[in-house]
Length: 319
Ligand SMILES: Cc1cc2nc3c(=O)[nH]c(=O)nc-3n(C[C@H](O)[C@H](O)[C@H](O)COP(=O)(O)OP(=O)(O)OC[C@H]3O[C@@H](n4cnc5c(N)ncnc54)[C@H](O)[C@@H]3O)c2cc1C
Image 1 (cartoon, rainbow, N blue to C red):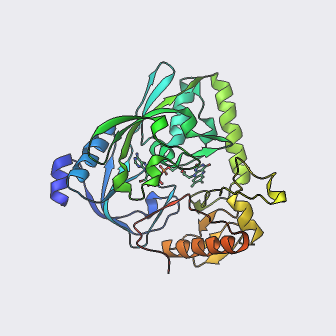
Image 2: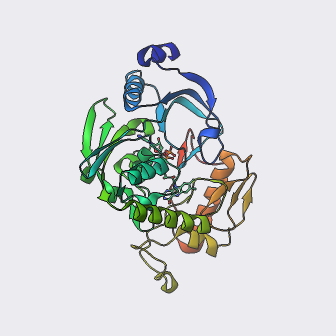
Image 3: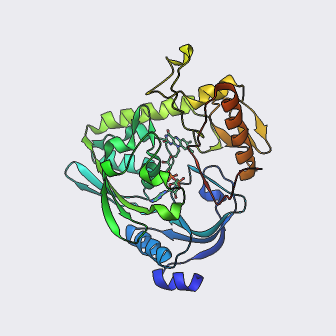
């Protein structure tokens, strides 16, 4: 397999590489194979090759929304570092591996804004589209026109935003649980807003300041659970609710989980929806803690929390 893949793509295929340092949670085991792609042609060629070879694979962006199992991933990890940006009028066509902070800065240098609300999110553009990343009342799909994908049949297609079923922290891609069945986002077409460079810079620093103030510091994936939709609002929830969703952090705080520890993993004392790694934590401990938090919220409120993060390389539930 190794030689076959290497020959097809002409890129180095590393074996048994730790994914720990490629994720913001800094835990998990090795990937069987790792290919780092630096442009969209390498991304396409590698994804086409693994589809043809019928090998299990996943695309790794910033690794800021995944928990990799302690036993690792028994397939090919394609680390996406494709990051070209080209402007067409008030639209931009951007490779999916660009890091969001780099993209926002590049656009600001060209006097384009609109994505400042994503400042401080450590993921790539591709990962942001999968998760419909958002903050401060806005999300990426509001700025998206279309994506170019390699679909699971191996066809390159342009898919318009309306066909991608974007919802809160969800997209058509994310609903397909096996990453290799989802297809690969190659490029993203965004609609931009022309703006004054100083005004864009001011917005960026305001958002970064808010994050600095409210966000826990340390190893995490950001918010762990999605804010659940609630049909029957309790009276004191109404003020907190946005579009029928109540903050998961609020529910978790009510059951007193801040600071709870499971081995090397803990719930932030600052924000009850942030599960963090002290440094030597295990993915299994994340699963155990997450399952117990879900069970407690269910018992107390009858609400089922759902992970915003994705588990990679796991089989079955936490024991
Ligand atoms: C400190 C911190 C703060 C955060 N704040 C926010 C926030 O405010 N709002 C928010 O929404 N999120 C937030 N996040 C979560 C996360 O950063 C975002 O969801 C981000 O967009 C994920 O991108 P990524 O590149 O890291 O994805 P990864 O974690 O690398 O991957 C996530 C999933 O997307 C898939 N994927 C990635 N790229 C592609 C591609 N090109 N094609 C197909 N599949 C792909 C992966 O296979 C995986 O299934 C935060 C995380 C941290 C650590």
